[in-house]
Image (cartoon, rainbow, N blue to C red; front, side, top):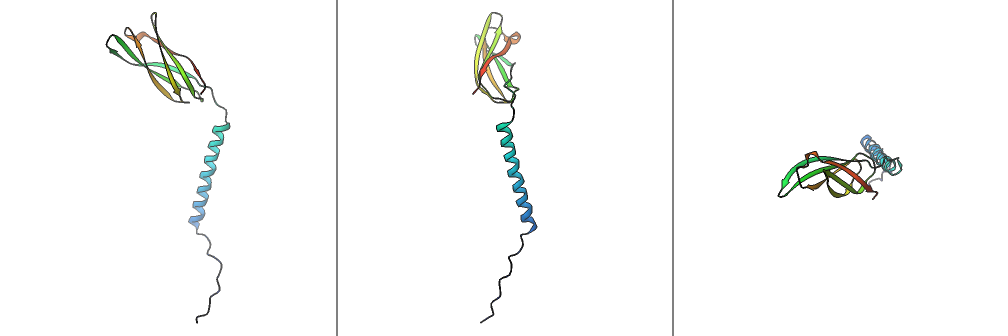
Length: 126
């Protein structure tokens, strides 16, 4: 029978293990910091702007694409978009405009709407 060897101390972790463990801990801390900042940080209210985009004829009406941009830090819901051309007013609702995002809506006019004024008349918090 061969003599039994006494078990020695376990080998020390390799340097790569320490580096990867530290990197993992840094990533977890960074993710937690971002989550906490977004959850408790101050937010700028929603600030919506409308801009006239592509215009095209469609039968008896003209269609004007309107881009609605949210320059604020909060989400806007049910944004009312309004376009005025002379005595005609066109309305549309954008369901959701995320913070720092944009959405598009189409308004219909009886004449070429290149001179139309577009605006966002109101919205609500989701």
